[in-house]
Image 1: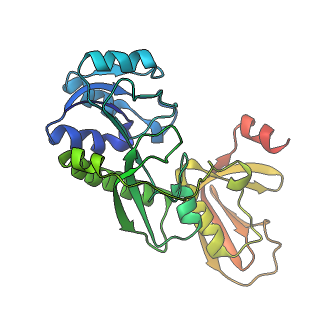
Image 2 (image 1 turned 60 degrees about the horizontal axis):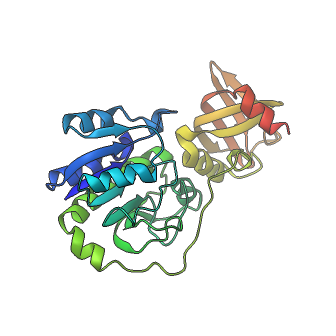
Length: 284
């Protein structure tokens, strides 16, 4: 089948799986890179290797009409920050790979909440692209277990690998899976975390604080220490009774800061002052 794909580097495996299954790539839609999680150099290089057209501007109905003229049969969406126009007048099929076991966890970035809620398993879903976000009929789901100490980075990597496995299955069995897709039914929509939800609450136990920091990982938690706002990416912690007020600095060594929690201490290992735009929002 001839196909176009919307993807970034984190889901290069999905692109590769369809090509390895014998599909012909016509076009790559990708978005400008804003941080390391949205890098696109690898998918662009892969598209160039297979002589596919590359577009970094927003997809329009004109683009879909052009794909139709080229004989494109399917649009595969693995990651795309813009709303995709109605594809049905132009293409036979369109599917999306969503990083949750639908119908639970619809929304832009569910893996953070999966860790915050201490889930013991997670998954990725391939579903028909529908007008309502993440509500299309399900073709297939790939599930996998989570660890007690799961982090944003480990779950992100697990999701990428599961997406590649799922894409390989979908690419091999596409039309039967498409025709037998199952409606989702009731589910849940998880909004993108707000800045307020990123704030570490040092009044909580050590275990809950560490889970919070692991959940946001490189996407960053926020901490207010002595009136200064910090972004936090990595920390350690331990239970140890003390008389220090939660949220107060108890020790400093080089760039590490030890902060008192309800039942112990949190050592901020990787932190820095928050940029002015975040500070301004927190002071509103």
